[in-house]
Image 1: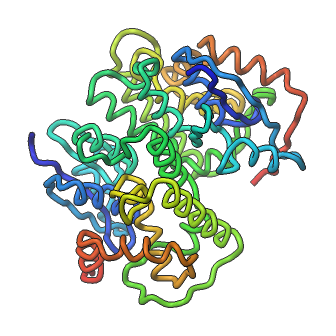
Image 2 (image 1 turned 90 degrees about the vertical axis):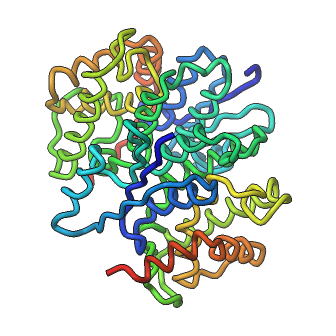
Length: 217
Length: 209
């Protein structure tokens, strides 16, 4: 898509932005990146100028606008360049969509108590029971996929897919909050961090000048 | 094709269940319905009988199981592309997916303060500012879709799409809590409420224990 652009928030903190950004990078779609620093007096107006919902991420191509991480991923997956974003097999694709959607609408406690913060020095943080339950659910989702995954890579369905894009921010949370997880989960998180587009994102996040201190819930 | 089975929660308040159920009805795919009563001691075990994910709604197609309203709808779109659960036009489809995803992950205040309750007699409710902002955003979304793509029919994108299924529980909330709508949108609300499938769901909800 020549002339495509993706509006994102801070790379250190915007987990929804990371999901869409890494999916676009994965399929090799060229795009201009428009980064709007969040949580500043001018943020809301800057976002409105780029994104009809006032939210990031937002994919723009001429007059065409799609916001929301999952909607952007589905839109890119429809294009020939994005055909590999979902598993080719129909049953695996349905499974990948189910866990991607579960991530999209769920895990509110994890999100609130352990927000993505790539500038944080990895160390444990205490969290309540509801967060522990959500972490257990994520590990169960990953374990089921990794036990049955096709060959072709270390990701949830072998090769990197949209499901991995959706869970990439979770891998960063598990690492920066030193969450105790299974060896299989840790290996999966390591694979996410070793993925070249992820390394590019993390390096840029560490270089950002902005620091946001989220109030602890 | 083996008959599809959809596992759902109570019709009174399971808004996530209503979305794929309505989509299935509207595209005319026959399916068996399994209703598990939620918020009971036996609920978890009952759901696990059908859905290894422990989630409803859950669609079973032979050996394949899909959970989550939006993932099920994407699966139905693949099964029946000719039903056009997403609009055929690329830009319209992009907007439909964006507003459906926004519904899927957002509007927490609306969900919390105006929970779907089909046994509630329509009456004026009260809600805080966050919910009012969600109500305003929903109306802006509906108005934009109707203005840009609604010319061919009474739905958000003319004909019935997944976006209408995703917002159908919101329509019932606006109705039951007496949310005043912008003048152009009352016809849309009434179109959804008058769908035979919606009437069927609502009548069943009112009979639930």
